[in-house]
Image (cartoon, rainbow over the protein chains, first blue to last red):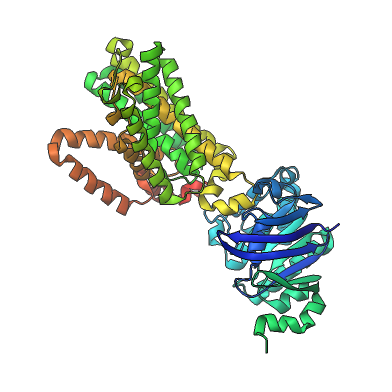
Length: 238
Length: 320
């Protein structure tokens, strides 16, 4: 049974349908990436998983149970953390308060101090800056904080929306390493949205490619990377 | 840090003694002013509670008015004594606010302010149009509490004013502080962390309106009547907003300082300059907001820190 399963999903904003009969599955313990040009519906899919957008038809299953009618806070409580696009840290709160808010769901609260130590081990810079206001961190540090905040809930599935946007190459490499470690050491399942196709497929087990709200390619990352269709989606058809 | 705490404790002690002692030295006029000051502290501190949760509203006159009419009608129709009437007014306002909060869940910023402002007018029109029940524009006349003695009335209103201030202290010391802060700074991100933002926003609405309704519940008993125009007076909404902004948003002392200063300055201008008083009041307000965007409390804090340089770890909400 896949950890996360989307089945025949239709999502609309008002009368405008943006996702068409989309089905995909993410297996436990894998890293998967969602690719596609701008406006192809990547973030919409992420947002429907955590209930920010409600699908018009279809089903979303997490650990075999339907979650598409649950309120967001219950979805989070079941073990999904969603690191939103553009980091969205609380700028006027300290780094520590940002992290502690991440352990708001009961599943995170129980092991709060263990998890905090774990996040500080993954991102030592956050430990150094814990008393500082989050808004004064650099872009890369804010992204680390956003990911660390997501990890505080001890999620089974980590959704990350465009984590590398606007970051320095050295920071990107550091984050790539962190995702690999989380997957390897804790068996964490990760689904991420990314614009950099080569990098995303390089770090993932599986790739899903969207075009105008439809899933057009899926398969093992290496195969997707080498496929002709991938070039057609991003560069146009001859 | 320690020094700051000592200063704060001394300040509160002096203020407390003044609140309890000074009234005995005052005549009726002075006492009436203190009742008004306390009422505005209640409104301004309770409005500030909603702002802590990021909800910019202009509905406080509505919550005040519902408190006033609930309490007045309970006394008129059922002969309920005023303390029970006040409780009824507070609960009525809280229930209304919870409903309003739920309906307005998706409204942000200025749209929420407009929606809550229209609530005040809507309530007034309802009260005006069911005269069989509310006595309509004629209003409700009540017998004076404490046989018209001002001193006990002042102590009741003082209690009403202290409650929302204590509630603010409680919020700031509990986990609500960061939860409200997260909703204020980025509601979407707060939701993504598993916070039931709906529940907390509705709670903030109900709590805030409870205190406004309590003040409203006592006011008609104090002035012995209530009419729709004074109970649902949009001016009260505006004052409840301006006072905390002038005093210092998101702080405990800000709404108190703002309410005390503006009520007394307003009264001084009214008695000294006659018709021109609102003009001067308005200009002073604009200047203060331009020059001291973090309010009188922020100004005082900066002055104090410049004089006594102590390393301070700022609280979450105080730094904006």
